[in-house]
Length: 105
Image (cartoon, rainbow, N blue to C red; front, side, top):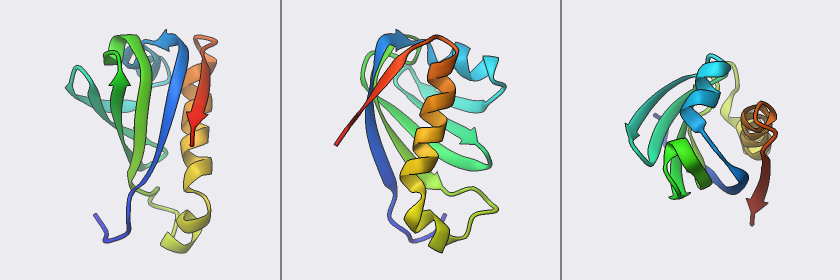
């Protein structure tokens, strides 16, 4: 890991999302650390997802942090694109279950 600060976003999902099933459907690799936290490999980046409300199988709200940017992305690019990267991840996982995601500022 590098010395750059982590970038995080908080989202609320309606209806709640079954994250493991959704990730498996998209063949996105992940490690469920416990019932409320998962490490996710998305487009070669490592994301940390921690539930703010609910479990991973009934996820109502979560904080998503980019631990490592995608391998092909240099650090200067990530300074301008981290929120777009998280948004791309959210768009993909919410598309299958027709779940809406609301980003909190």
